[in-house]
Structures are given as structure tokens and as C-alpha cells.
Image 1 (tube, rainbow, N blue to C red):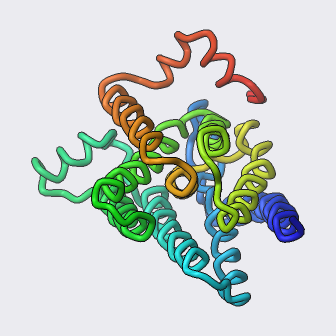
Image 2 (image 1 turned 60 degrees about the horizontal axis):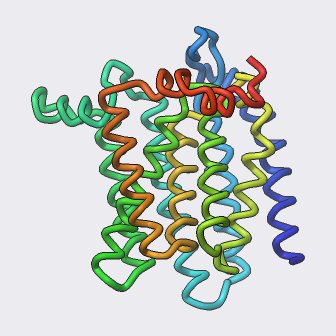
Length: 276
């Protein structure tokens, strides 16, 4: 319990101080972008989660966790940083004229052009396959785990178009991990650490003062997928993968924002906590 409290407290402090540093650094270097209201605000504050994850890896590696589970989780964290790096590159040099999975693959097939989005998708899928081989022994579960990780990473990214929406999606994943499964004791410190960081940065996100960006959205979705892989049974994973596939197919041809606005319950949840 003491270790859990340490990681939870550390997560909140890193998130609190990190957002203040991000606000200064991003404005100084001009890492800004127009939000849905046309206001220029920092894009990619998810870098706070990346730096915090790096701190987690260094501390755990220094302490030298024993057992295969600890080493396996550290490797999963390392692959999560690769996912975040891919998102960071997309935030900084990506083009916004190509949208959706079909758009990126159309550019690759028709124009022979590799977009940053397509490169990011390839890196996410590669990292998902790496973790799936670590976390399961049967071929079927490895395939399910890989799809779960990749789809979860993109799911949070799909939500990151309005203040607070991506964080709420991440919290939903965390809640489902606890409600529909059991988070292993070895994973609980990282679970609490990441959750408290998200609570600390929420005021900036909900007030529209900074955008999570692909840097954070893909990372949070991927980390949420890791928690799900370790917490859920195969049957629960299959159900969620099916739901995520359906959601992605829907999002390719329609707007999730429009769908949320048309549903009274979803609209209320979406607007909850949003300052503007």
C-alpha cells in the first residue's frame, strides 16, 4: 500500500508541475495549433505522460524489480514510449489534409506517399504485436491482444477533438479494467501513477488551455490497452475488440461528435466538467 501511495502521489505531482512547464516551453517554441474554436493553444501536452513514463521506467529499472512480470511490464512501457514518439512526430510534422485510416492508406496506395499517420499506425501495430507475444501464450489470444492494443490507442485519438473527451475515454477504460476484470498487483503501481497524472492535467484539458495531441492520446489509449490485456479474460477482450472494430468502421464514414451531440446522455457526459 505504501508503494501504491508513493506512485499515486508522484503521478499527481509530476502532472501538476509538468503542465506548468509545458505551458511555458510550448509557447516559447511555438508548438501551438488552432483548437476547434480557432484559438492557438499548446498541442501535444501528452508529452507530460511520456516524460512521466520514462521516469517510471528509470526508477523501476534502478530498483531492479524481480520476476518476469516486472521485466515484462517495463518492456511494455518502453514500447508505449515508441507509440508516444510516433504521435509526437504526427503532431509536429503531420499533415491535416489526410483524415481517417482509409485516407492514410489511400495516400499510400494511390499517391505512393507515406503519411506520418500511416507510419504511426505501423509503429503502433508493431508495438501491439510485441506486447501481445509477451502477454499471452496461445496464438488466438495474441491476435486478440494485438487488436485490442492497436484499437484502444486509436480509440482515444478519435475522441481527442473536444476538451476533456479523450481523458474521459481513458477513465472509462480504467473503470472497465476494474469492473470487468482484475488488475494484477504488479500492474497496480503504474495504473495508479497514470491515473493520478490524468487527474492532475485535467483542469488544463477541460478548460481548453492545452490539447493532448496524438502524443498523449495514442499513448493513453495504448496504456489503457495494456491494462486491459492484463486485467481481462479472453472472452471480455473479444467483446471489446468487436465493439471497437464497429466503432472504428462507423467513425470512417460518420462523425463521432455529431453522434454524441444527437444523444442526450452522451452529450451530457461529454459536456460534464468542460469549462468552455
